Image 1 (cartoon, rainbow, N blue to C red):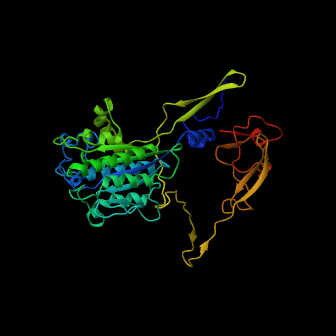
Image 2 (image 1 turned 90 degrees about the vertical axis):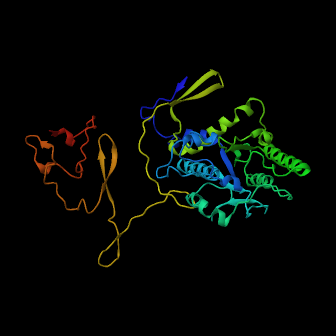
Image 3 (image 1 turned 180 degrees about the horizontal axis):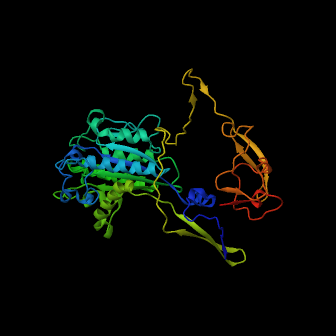
Length: 425
């Protein structure tokens, strides 16, 4: 058994500093492509679920919205559409904070306006400039998405779902658009998901007869084709205590639920929404590798194991300014200008003076002209340093012992060195 034994190894260092961990992470981890599919029908805008009382929260959101955000009024009501937008916004912010490489797209269906690759009715893909429909979240995307609710009715608009006398099927179109957005990337290296937010358990409840049967069949077939491509469809239902979301009407067949999974689905869906809201409040830490073990079984057969730190100290995070488009850290530069002429003042050049240390070999002492003028003489004794009897200041040669370069860690002394004639108080 070989153990990585390094006295300078930092137990609590980041895995990003470890080249072995970087290679392992690149080989093992996979990216995630997510399409947020939000129902924008008029029913989603009904404020039937007050946010002031935890008991009046949607059943799947109790706990996720049990605490109001500071500044909200007690009698303020929250619609299901607001809940969906808030959950998505929290998820996007958590991805940026965690420096995630996942890519996301935001899509609304049952809308008045249309904006999608296939130009299908009732589907609107929200995006900002200088960004693909499916791309990494940016600060500009989050900022405009947080202000979307104010302009949604004007720029995008809402409409009822499937209405009698029409053959338009917005849900079918939405799944098709989401499938097209997730076309890039291989299912072997990328996890592809569609998160569906809705409070309508029967999207074809307003139509009857052959039209309803045909829409149900084609929508389920579209969902099955999407899942066959390696795309997972996850439902996040929104319901109030007086109107329970009945998943057995339609969506159980769409996402393939049966048996115990069907019974426990509502509770698990509520936990997913709660996690989306709480991700921003949690600090995500990557695993800290402590040691690497290599077990040799027989010649040519070995097993590598890693041990990780389960407890690590918490330190305040640093503030990093990011570009609103590329989401990359910004570099700051500082220049000095003359107050009288406005001309650019160049900083003084840094100079190096080589000297030889007994314990460390050849070193370069860094000097700056404004701190160490060339003609400076060391006529004063540094504080805390006394000379032995019979030793005068001129014998201390500055080119041999630079100013304040006496190191107590020099345990091996060869030749005539300054530590041999100087002692500290």
